[in-house]
Length: 224
Image (cartoon, rainbow, N blue to C red; front, side, top):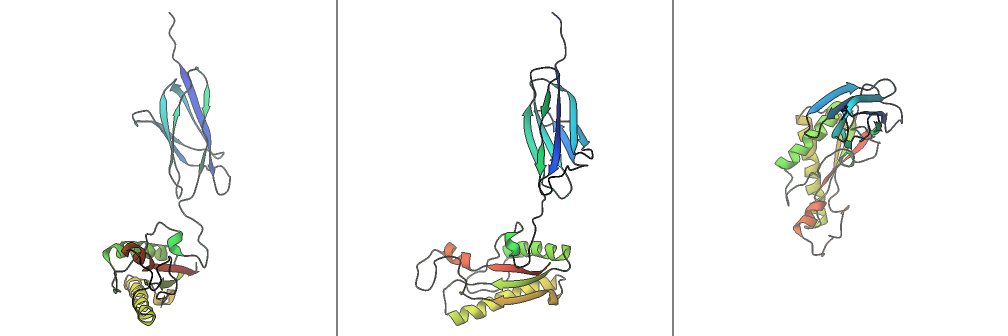
């Protein structure tokens, strides 16, 4: 019997999801089923990539990378017919979200809530890890100004909670200033129990986790 090599082709276009324009110079890497690299290339000005002479009926993985964009991967299986062309397009999105003045920084970046222990205003080790992220954003955007808002749960009196939250806000501001951020880029204010996120107001029985959800901090963008 005659034997021949069954080979197929793989091609596609990489598109910037935000602009709907082709993404040139994006790196496209092809892996076999064992995740060993088969080849890699960069897209042209039309955002096109192309791999030829691939084995038929084989599984491959395509990885797309471009600076400041999320990495994307997709698994494909080639055709059983020699000469066929498999088309796989990608819409890649930016790693960074548009941040508007007035929005809370914690809603725009992968930042976990900054909590405080009951009746305390010191920066916890887990909170410090999150503040390092805030610090990096401020360093990356030297014109950005933030309003630090801190909140308490409803336990203790309203007056006491206002003072406690003020201490917490100042504590955060001092930490950022200590680590190189100019004080004129920051404001700090405590809101006590005036802006609870759940039902846990005075006299309502709640779990410790529900109370802790109210002991939080926000970073409102005043200028970017």
